Image 1 (cartoon, rainbow, N blue to C red):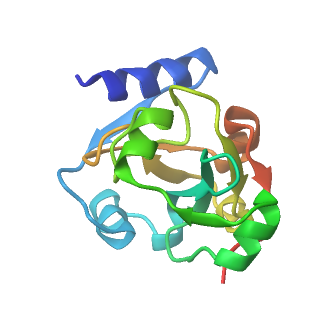
Image 2 (cartoon, helix red, strand yellow):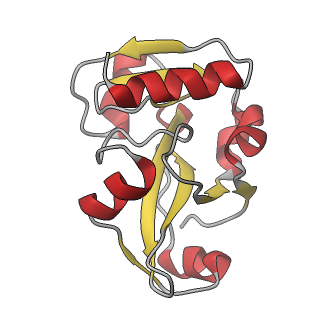
Length: 155
C-alpha cells in the first residue's frame, strides 16, 4: 500500500470514519471514475488545486464531477489571483500526485472550498491518494473533515 493511500486511510480513521477504499485502475476523468464505481457523475468529488499568486500556496476546490470551477469566482473567494498549480507545488503541499489528490491526509494544511452540489447526495466518492483509488463518504462530513468552506465557485 502506498504512503499516500495509508495517509488517507489514517486521516479517515482518525476522524472516526470507516475507510471504504476501492481500487479502480487508472481513471483519467470524473466520468470514468463514476462509471467504475457505479455512481452519478456529480457524486465524484473532484479535488481541483490552484496556486494562490500572492503567497504561492495551493488552494483546494472540492467540486462535483460534472461542474467546472469558475476562475473569477474562485479568485474572489480566495481573495487573490489564482494560477495553475504545477505538479511540484501539488506534491509538496498535499503529498499527492495529480489525479490522486484526496480531500484529506495532506502533508500541510490547505485552504479549501466546497461545492454545495456535493451535499445533494448521500454518498460521494473522492480520490484516496492515488490516481487508482477512491473512497466513499457522506459529503456532509466534508466541511468538518477538511475545513472547507461551503461556497459557490462553479460555472
